Amino acid sequence: MSAGTDGPRPDADAAGRRERKEDHVRLATAQWQGGKRTTEFDDLEFLHHALGGVSLPEVDLGIELFGRTVAAPFYINGMTGGTESTGRINQQLAIAARETGTAMGCGSVSIALEDESAADAFRVIRRENPDGLVMANIGVGRSVEDARRAVDLLQADVLQVHVNAVQETVMPEGSPDFSSWLRGIEQIVAALEVPVLVKEVGFGLSARTLADLASIGVAWADVSGRGGTDFLAIENDRRPGRDYSYLTGFGQSAPAALLDARAHQGELGGMTLLASGGVRDPLDVVKALALGARAVGVAGSFLKAVVEGGPEGLVELIGSWQHHTRELAALLGARTAAGLTGTDVLVRGRLREFCTLRGIDAGAFAHRSARATDDPSDPQEQR
Image (tube, rainbow, N blue to C red):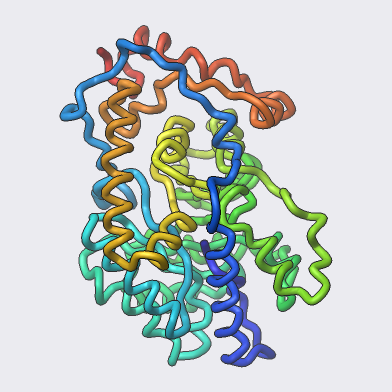
């Protein structure tokens, strides 16, 4: 959950910015209450091979991410920060990240760039997690100098730049001026010494968008699809008339974006993809890895855990997810996260319709293990 637009707003006072941050957390938390939601991850199904598994001790799902080794192929995605209460959330998230060896992103640091009194709600992340992989976060439209300040604020290993055209359209304070965004990202990528990860905020990155990003030197992107924390709904709920409800469902899901990207790999210049948006459990993590994500970002499920159980509750949940993802990989015959890209995946329902309309051969995903057996260079380890 990357809370809010990041462009400078000289007409918005500090109290208004803080209120917006609090609104985002309150409304996002409410979205994750209740039972399990339906997403397009449900349109993905693994073909079960009853004798195809490997032993659990053989499985190592540690991955290299931004030049660092992390314990598991999922991470705490950007959520919040900038107020006293959201600073406490960041502190608790950072403790859980430290205790579990999990990478962590923060929410948009825009408020801290404009108001120094808000900065400690972000600095607490590095204080609690001095050696972990930490990602700072700003919105597209910010200057190179702001990008550097964001990295310095958290002593960050990575800068996330979030693009949020749908959110800007619906947000009461929004500024839907998108024409300079690509050029601004190019300038930040060229100027910064740390890796830059471009991410959506829950509406998906199409293959065309990824190709545009690759053309300006972006090497990392989070497709961040529909189905997770819904910033369209959040911003619409902040409007007196709630007059943008007709846009509900706009955008692509993370599975759709990953399928689209795999069908156009030649246009992406070796870009490494991450995925987030609607990740509810370890099975969703494994499905995203099977579609080619290097790592998977989780926000809503982890936010709910930390709000209800503090850092101890989130440490317990992350530990459970780490164990379950290894068990699922063993069941599917994958010794590494990359090995999951050789599993057989059935694409059904609305997601299959997306593939048909985009000219993607969905059926090919159901026959990958046979190809892996024939091709020793395939990342799926041979049995």
